[in-house]
Length: 429
Ligand code: F0G
Image (cartoon, rainbow, N blue to C red):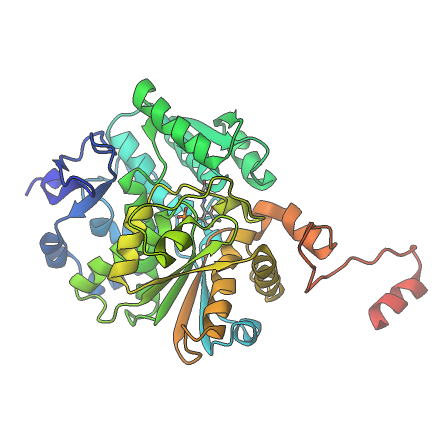
């Protein structure tokens, strides 16, 4: 079988099929799915094969993305793969998280441990690799910060030109600094993320830039490996729930697709339920799902301290609804107060994350309180970004300087004169 025969791109709206060339959207405007021939996959991989690769010295298999390459992009050969390597992220447990959530068996999978500090590297590696395979020169994305940081790094590493569109003044400094430092052309848009997204889609079509937002289905294929690697870590025994922060809905979509494929391949025997967690002020999926609407109920002016998920018109909403259906999933919303308090618990456990990531724990706590999640069920929360991405939000929380958010678990610095007695007073207080 020729490599490209193992894959077709299929429109989720009109069903039209494409050969895997330089298309990432259907002519009808619909999103494409990467459909990999699972019969072929089942013949070439197994739990054993993945286990052997875990101990391999081959660089490609040291990546938590490319270890599962048959399920990511069977066409990618070693020469076009751009890898740091990514993935291999830890699972954490902590007494404070059990107390806070009420769940006995709760684990955090920390995607902030990826090379540029967020899960985006999982999808960017296959996305940029595909750009290399297709001999593209310029890659583009709109971003609330993490996608741009990741794309800038991977594109520069591969010698491609990265162009990022960001909402002016609305992304965290840690992320902006990465995009600038990794050498991206940074275009600030007067407007929010949704405006930036519309503009980059149009500009990419007209100007021949290769779009690397999660509209691009190869990004989704890479993000599937968060689930594949998680199941591998859990010896292929599914948890009951997987909680994930939800913004542009790439992860929710990717998780549903991954779990469905793992189930069909009989690599897992139980289907976990996805809990997608949105910020109250940026909750289009929550609105759409809870009202059972067939159309996206978008949010005109999204607002949340979790700038990474400040999105009112998510591109992958149809794929996300499909993922919720396949996994019998739920959607919950949480306030900024709940997000920052959950973050303080994750940070205070020595694990640490950026605000958007903490939505997953905040959501689990709420779903336990409402009886949707049982305290005896097994839960994995996906932590999406590193604590240093948005240090301003963290410091302002602890100094109680955030408007409308109380510093419930504040840890204030103490100012003293350089005097031993004063030190003693502070230590003994
Ligand atoms: N958490 C973090 C830290 C993110 O950066 C994002 C998305 C999400 C959660 C939401 O994930 O879009 O798959 O639902 N950040 C994008 C960006 C939008 O541009 O960096 P999603």
